[in-house]
Every structure is written in C-alpha cells, then in structure tokens.
Length: 222
Ligand SMILES: [Zn+2]
Image (cartoon, rainbow, N blue to C red):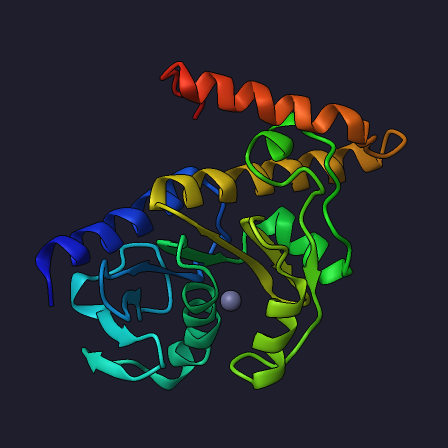
C-alpha cells in the first residue's frame, strides 16, 4: 500500500465526517483514484467515523481486490465507485454517504432543485438527479446510476439509499457533498413555509460565471 494514498483516503474520510454531511452512524465510503493506474484506494470499514488505516484497501477498476481485506458487505458498493472512474477520466475521488437531508430526497424519489446558489456555482445548475433503486451491488444499481448521471454534473441521489458525489479532487467532492446536503436541508425546511423556489434558469449560468471569475482571481470560495 502506498502510505501517501492511504493518508489521503483517511484524511478525506475525516473531513467528510467533520463536514457534517453524514448520517449518525457514519455509513459511507470514500475512494481515491491511483494516478496513472487503473486502481483506487477505498475505505472498507463500515463507518467513516474513526476509519482505521488498516481497513483501507486497493482495488482495480475492474473490481479486483489487489491489497487488503474487503468484507463482502463493503464490497457490494465498490462497483458504483469503479464505474465513476471508468466513465470519466476527470474523476479523482468518489464519496458515498447517507447524509440525512439528501437521503430524505433519495427516499422520497425526488430530485433536489436548484434553489440555492451554491448548486449552480458548483456544477449542479439543474439540481441533483435521482438514480432509480436497484439492490446494492447489483448490475441494475450501477446501470441506474449511470443512466442518471449527467456528464459534468458531480452528484446523484441513490433512490432508497443515499448520495454519490464524484469530482476531480477530494476537496471538491467534500465541498459538493456539503452543498448537496445544505440544499436538501433548505428544501425540506422551506417545505413548511410554501416550498423552495428554484433560481430562474437564465440566472443559473450567471452564478457559475461568477464562481469561475472568483476562481480565476484565486479567491477561495469554500
Ligand atoms: Zn450506502
């Protein structure tokens, strides 16, 4: 195992927990692509809370376990990680959690609309789509996720399950995971006072343009 990559995976798990966009039991998994190889490092413990270094495993993008121990229950969701790397050369990190508010939308089978500006700024101008349910680890589950993913859009809700985020770096994936959870929470809270109102479509690209301008100016927008 490469020590630096194990460090990165553990650090990402810690930061997902610290972000608060996670369920009470910490269920979820994190993976990082191995640069220049058809492999990823993956969290094989059941919870991201206090994830032990010894439970990080190395897996080929064809699903083959290369190093470490992978319990079958954790192995069941490996394919949704490998699929994201296989489908987009840009993806460097995949996160999966049951963050409570986003999971509420997933359980309701409802997409999250673009009713907070951060969604438009971070690549989700049409909100977060929902992938239809398939039993975890099944070919259907992965096919449904692939069918729901919009090229260039870094997140999808998993019906009756949780949320999947995939981005160039762990930093961006954690950021988007937090934005999705915040948007879901705002949507549910707004539900009791008339419901969330989406940003007019024509103004969403303006939000993204402004985000890119900030990026170009070297300003952190996290
Ligand atoms: Zn899950």
